[in-house]
Length: 383
Image 1 (cartoon, helix red, strand yellow):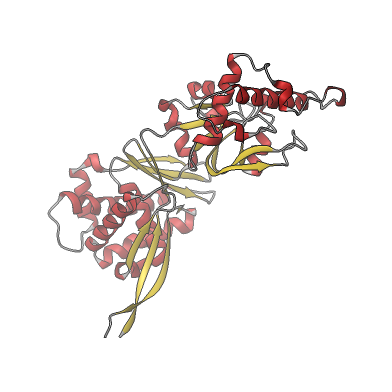
Image 2 (tube, one colour):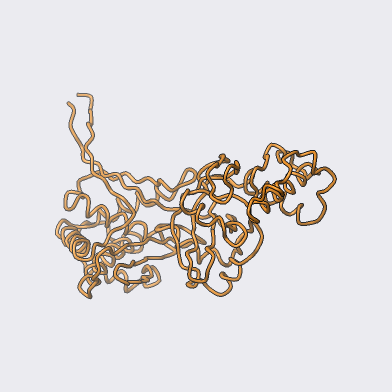
């Protein structure tokens, strides 16, 4: 006989940044002249219009590649100086033979190969704006090479480009002096210093795993975030965190872990309490971080509370990760912790936790980019 079962699908939308994964700064043209095109059109490209990328398929640098860069640079300079008809550059590749001298052209060849042919889809890039108070864009490459034909500066030119999902932005002045100095580099593309990656990752990703730290972000969308809102949020997070600690560190096989028992678990294992950073600027955000997976689990259970309320305890939870670049064990880990925590919560305790989540969500507009959605599925038991 067929029956229906309640399922809640949870998307943790968490980017896992590998220890060896590089982030790249892409300079948007001389004097940042291409910044507006990058931002508006959702693309990134090096400042080499009408460049024949077929010449760059060879692994080794050769004279034809250097000549192609010289040709493109000459066309670029013509556009920058006003497109005079009397000084229109030659388009014939043969006219640049034997002229491609200098170390800079070799460096540009390497930049072209890296950006267009080597960086995989999903690579994180940073694009600085022109001024100290302009926005720095952070995003991910979302395509291989495309042809862009509507760049404002290069009217009539075909420009090789790559699509980008812009994920966040932050004013340049708010970064460290070291990061700002790196953003001023004149090269078309450079790898961001490993030590500076931690400044840019939170700009792009609400949930991420980086250098062994799990982090989740909660956004406040209302203008007011009161001490009562803070109490409700922390009551929810402390209870869930305490239950998670109890399920791992204490001998508590029984259901109905109370708030006092959860808090006692946190007192006994203070090193497992997620760190809380707040920036309540009406609107603002709260961010949980820990070397344990708990921030992602807390965000998942918070979204579960908002989506399903008290009925969530009888639902089957399915966790996936839409932001994973490959098969992700993180989603499996979160799902197991959600199941373990929910099994230890009594009905009254879970109702109280849901009430706290709903209150702070309603009054402060608190939400997470971890999404939960209810559905029903037919379960055919074969009878």
